[in-house]
Image (cartoon, rainbow, N blue to C red; front, side, top):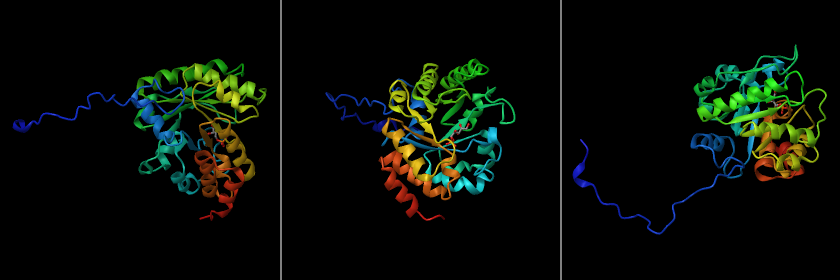
Length: 291
Ligand code: 5RP
């Protein structure tokens, strides 16, 4: 029974004190609904505005490529150092412990492999992303590829509609066509097309002139690491991207193909969140023992 005879009158009304009206820390995200902002705040650290996503979705097109043959052995020990996990629903359900308490950016398009022509993908049902409590869904967009551009933009468009209905942000992943120049003009175009079609985050590649790519993209950009580089170069890449305005990295091979993956993700984290200089981050990498 409710205790109705001791309802005390409130006294602390704060008359004259304006109600707090927080802005939102992420570029282009201030007008999103609460659930979207909550999910984005799990991916991006509100204290720094940045994220280190650990990408290990490569198997969905490449199969058991180097570093992801045994995700239980190679990737799971790295999870504690990541801000967000990017993977497929198959790996999430079969290998990632739900107790890891990490936000997930779910790879949500599928349909091709390296055995055939890439990017003829379709989008998975957003209800599965809801069941998996995904904090974002990721969809590839192949700007400039005559065979797949229209279909992949339609995939993004559908993912955005589905994501808005479910309160789940969408990350547009720019795929680079074989004939595309990997320059700021191209990445600026591809990133902007993702954002214009409603992506809440864009993943693209660092290139010279990256500050222009970031400046004309109205939502946060994270960079993929790309193929494995020497650790020094990968840390320089992350540093240059952050210095140019990137909101983080979505890095895979340069972490899990490193000889010391845990040391590498820690060093990348220091660059991303603390702005650590590449030389110091490399020292951190060398000083961190391999478990
Ligand atoms: C594969 C992807 C990867 O997640 C992305 O490319 C990041 O990984 P890497 O740093 O190894 O490039 O989208 O399609």
